[in-house]
Amino acid sequence: QVFLVESGGGLVQAGGSLRLACVASGRAVGRYVMAWFRQTPGKEREFVAAISYGGSTDYADSVKGRFAISRDNAKNTVYLQISSLNAENTAVYYCAASGRMAWMSRRASDYEYWGQGTQVTVSS
Image 1: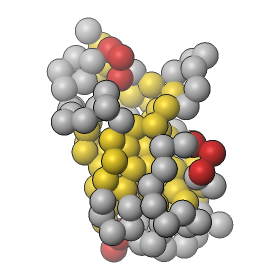
Image 2: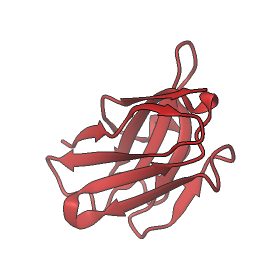
Image 3: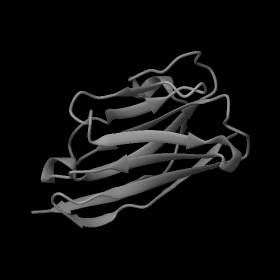
């Protein structure tokens, strides 16, 4: 079993930046595919970014160039640096992990472990 805890969310002005962190416990996730998703009320969970255990990355088109995912396997932690924020980025951001996949996926159903989420609110 893997437990994921996100942190780093909060209220930020448009144009600002945040760094979200996801700390895993229960197992070492160095060989896991890790990802970030986000969700707003009434909408489905949306893919944001993923990182393979080799360090390859994938991003949703809407965040390319503004968001950066990274991992520190020694700390069992994945990060999401989010920059140039706008109101459309307001959401609950979730960390996800999969030990079953050999490569990254943009589908939420492919990830078997999830955190509780951290709220990011962008004020204009």
